[in-house]
Length: 90
View 1 (cartoon, rainbow, N blue to C red):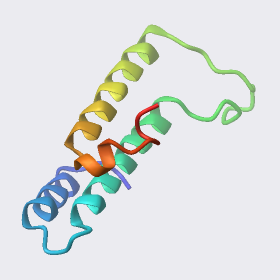
View 2 (view 1 turned 90 degrees about the vertical axis):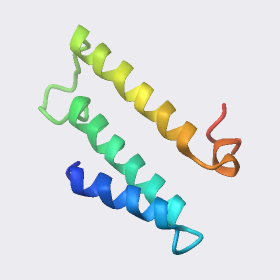
View 3 (view 1 turned 180 degrees about the horizontal axis):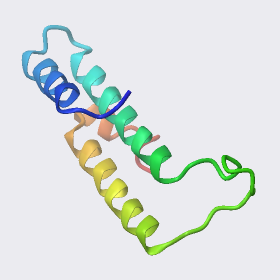
């Protein structure tokens, strides 16, 4: 699922209207999936090119820092019962 302004708009709308109890969770899951897609785009599987190795560069480090910040932002936007979950707080 490619990231788009429309998907972000839909998540915002679902969260704002909260027609169903699960709408907040749905929006968080969609945003989490978008972050996972970005992670996979930056860090493909080690064997995807057949060499069996990956390289770590300054660009990868910057991407990792940005993705980590995005995950922290997502975590802070989550309701307390999700944010305080033992699986999200090591």
